Image (tube, rainbow, N blue to C red; front, side, top):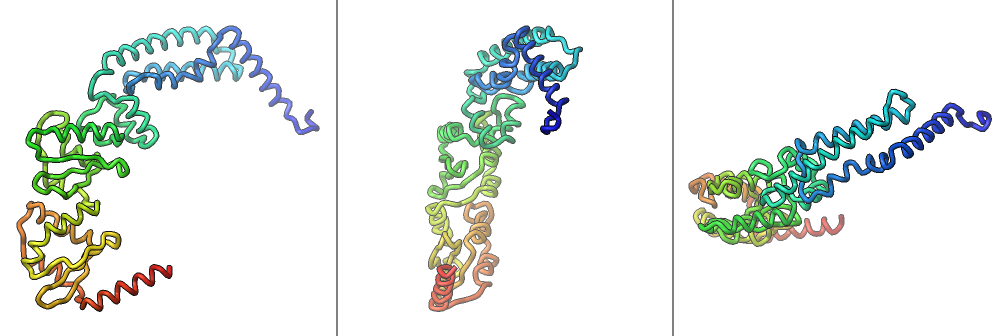
Length: 321
């Protein structure tokens, strides 16, 4: 056999392992099957089981796996009767888990199986945070990007009696879109994390204390309609420095502004323009004419034809690439 490239010691080890496996199957029927399904049993519960509830059951599973490994490896000190002791303890732990589920499954802030499955497939960091408690509060809700849950949160925010905010969900980007009643048409896009920083107190403690400055600081204005409405809000500030919007190119991220009396044009990075004017537009800071005028005017000036030629060259270059 050695001449044929077979290792006799290895064959003997495998044969011994097979023999011991047969002994286990005879003396402890179903042991290996139960160990294979040990963790999957937890997936059958309709809500997430927190770490502190399931930990003892998981540890017992590891003890059983270690016992099986030791016996199959030929450790004669491994007592098969210990399987029964471990399984009896595990059954008691499963009873505790079932009691926990019965007591908490109707809690509106419990982590449902739907949320758990979604996050396991998309965000393991979120799972780790939620497993600490098993229920949702203001400190961990910002980790949840499951669409149905986000829609429930948006609905709750829309039920505020003051109607200060209108909320919706962008399922594709997994973000909340918030409109202030004072600035309808301008959607403020927030990640779940920053959204909960702003609205968590209301959603979980019924205390509406929104830090509007914090909201504006972290919100993005991304949709075409919202950007267009935002630029319209800027019209009065542009007129104050003798300017007006000429064109808006969201794809190229540019805003072209015309100096009315002198009839020249400047082109501004749209993102930088929004960042520079955001606090002013949302009335967090007073309108300061001089720095605003300098921000616009202190850049290259073009005639309409020059600007057209620049764009034409860029388009041809892009097509060539």
